[in-house]
Length: 307
Length: 307
Image 1 (cartoon, each protein chain N blue to C red):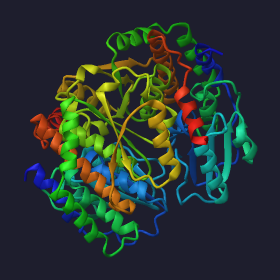
Image 2: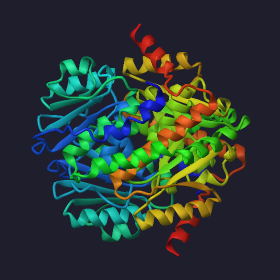
Image 3: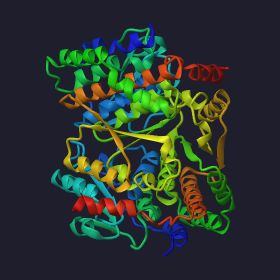
Image 4: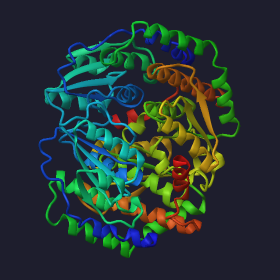
């Protein structure tokens, strides 16, 4: 499947209805995952705060993981070495382990598996990875998946805004800087990594209000400011955050390109912004004449690591 | 006090012996703090994993904060609005609240206060903010503070390496990219924010192994690669991380400038790397003819927000 085809599967992924049963008795949730598989845990962590959710993106797990911990292992391929390592440690600590994967060694070794379809790039499987978490822990409206599907389909039908934005970046070879805020900090990170993997350019991400305590300082006096193009999302519900965005622009003389989000509800907004970033980075790859699915550096690295 | 004078207080800050008594009964630790005050919680979070430590850098706290939570409010000034807001919420949830501050509204409103000396920039008070956490939760050797002090003093006496590094960045107006790894991810972030506040330039930070799943991809094909200068720390104890650093360099044809860390133990390394970044960003400010203590953008923002 080409990358455009992959992007377009997102609207069907949101209909994925799997969930984890019997989670109530676990006082902590730990979610392991790297890169395109790990982003689902990061997004979920911001949307849910009834219990501590700790994300693990390394070989080892925190000391506190025990039999009261629900450990969710996310690896699209099922062969990510960091996740296999952390999952093995979790099992030794008697945590309940649930894997979300399309196959690989993870699906063979896990006691419980939420099986998702294969054949996609991990970063194109976000719906499959995220929906089981939302279905399990959030009170999703019965109509929510259909609404999400319709919204994403509309974006598939008209992504001219994302294309125009890609042209702005391409024309002047700009480095994107994406400023998020809660609960969309991880979406800024998602954009950054999609610029990395799809468009093959470096990008920065940060978030309000933290950036008002450090990154605001260079925005006026930094050298090379014309190398960067600044983004934020036009959907801050906290008036103090909205005021900060406006004031940060004003104080530093910086233009933040504000992505309009014509959607209500945090889950809808998260999916809208994810898909917006998917298209933006896809179009930028096209303009650069680069294959968005080519991640040969990652593959070459894996070969070198296993040699 | 000038900025160099401030930097040189770090060696005395590590002798600060305050601690939080009676913490054992709390099953979760939440640490609130922004920017230069928040970094202490981030560094601590990586060094300690016996209980979940959640850092809060926003106005609101997670829903799970309750009477079994030890809530540590870190604000050097004591007047950071996000921390005042989150602390107020924590108090309403009956968490035990301990403030680490030099004064302000936080010291007036908190039940328990660890009082630290005033008169510094928040980012220059890291020792005062971090030591109470280390004294309370880590098994510090009795001789550890003196050892830290001697190491930092040596760096004060000879910081020629940091100056030479600053000259490299200055000569070609480079944007630093700092790659950390556990337990020094937050040190990469600290460097980034010190480049922001002291040197007034933008910077990127990221960490292994996560970056091998996304940011590795553009390292060869990105445009404007010559704008960036890449750093990592030469003290990875996990051989799989060390192998990744070497392989990432090789696969992408990138030079990572490796900061030598002639110190043993994670706490010592953390302080060494913090102080290295302090000097590097200070010297860069000097070369740029910029006052490292000038954070007028932050002050102007505060005025605008309170108007």
